[in-house]
Length: 231
Image (cartoon, rainbow, N blue to C red; front, top):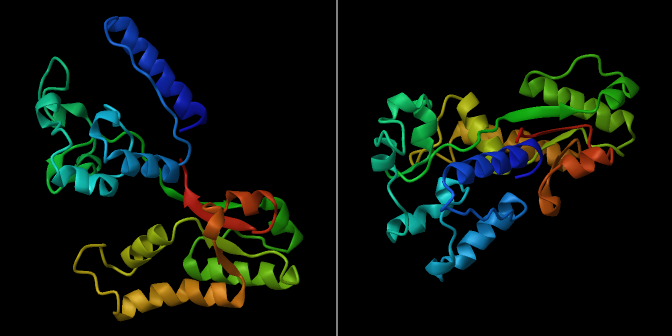
């Protein structure tokens, strides 16, 4: 966590320590989400070295929950002294609270939430005659093809930071929620996969690959736009 979010967290920590002088908090920035997940996974073998609190996606902690290494936060949420008195009183959206559960148990509290957003190079759009920012998947494909062709194949039109997010949202657009009942070989799934795969094969789309995020290639003007999380 960096930037404004990091500064906010430091301020919240400072405020908490002033109100609770007997408690000292040591903040540790692990770098990227990948670094953080790796650190948590490697430390699972030595539970005493795990942090008291960590930022994490629930899926990272599934095994920890199964091994009873996590704390159910419901009693704390329902306690008026340390919590809100109830989940409803917290004023946190139910779907966000549910997203921090593992098999129905509230092991987490929504910490920050990002959304997928399109970032594009305005100067590059003007250079290649793009007058409208794409707002549909079909327009994204058309604009990407145009940029790739007009740049003599030097600039990739677009890409998605996360293949998992792309697939999940793509299936949502097709009317399917991502559950254990999803049909990966069904017509909708093939449509979502082929849309991206075809673009990558023809060159106007790309994946992040070993660079993890497309913000780097975007900054170097190797890709004209990308879809990634806002946080």
